[in-house]
Length: 76
Image 1 (cartoon, one colour):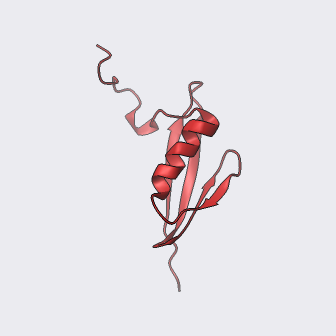
Image 2 (cartoon, one colour; image 1 turned 180 degrees about the vertical axis):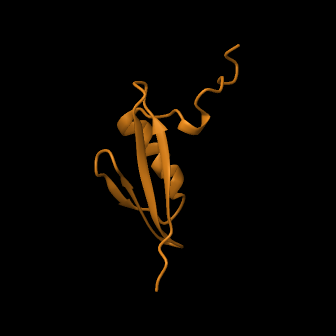
Image 3 (cartoon, helix red, strand yellow; image 1 turned 45 degrees about the vertical axis):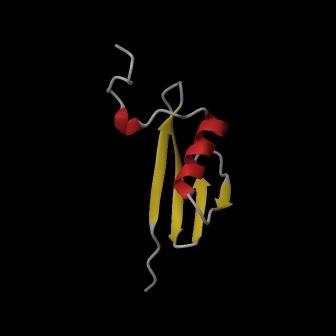
């Protein structure tokens, strides 16, 4: 049975809503797709970077939800 690798990149927008882009596939056959707006793209190189760029540009989502509650550098 073929195995499909799936991972995701999640970020929060300024309103606190979480947006997720899923990265599916392995090797040079990867597809990225946004759960929020349905945007899809083939991504041979750096799919996670392309996912982060989409979230920032299309949804203004730049805050990593796993970093929630931590002070940003230089904020003290």
